[in-house]
Length: 91
Image 1 (cartoon, rainbow, N blue to C red):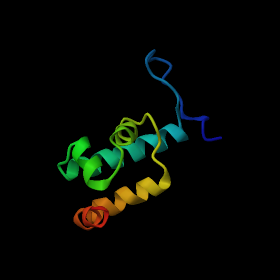
Image 2 (image 1 turned 45 degrees about the horizontal axis):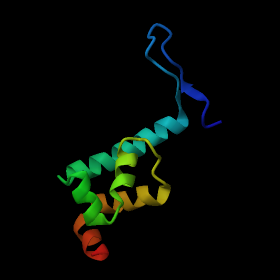
Image 3 (image 1 turned 90 degrees about the horizontal axis):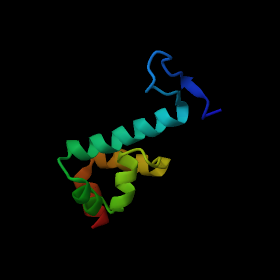
Image 4 (image 1 turned 120 degrees about the vertical axis):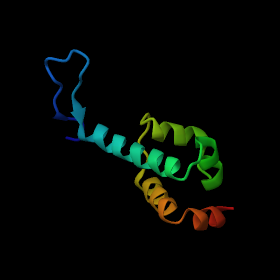
């Protein structure tokens, strides 16, 4: 199952917790989105406006409160490679 722990908590660390494949996937997607935005030197508000992503949704994805769907990850990868073309296309 996707929610079963794949990295168990460290029993000697009371603040540690089990990590599931789903949590790792969400974290990797979050990191890709945040890194793409910061590499472009854009604030969350600037990125959201430029690429027509709802600001609250972007924040949720970056903070891993929600998992970005696969189509959004594909969109971010295209933005990463061709930001000016994407910005022009959605203007």
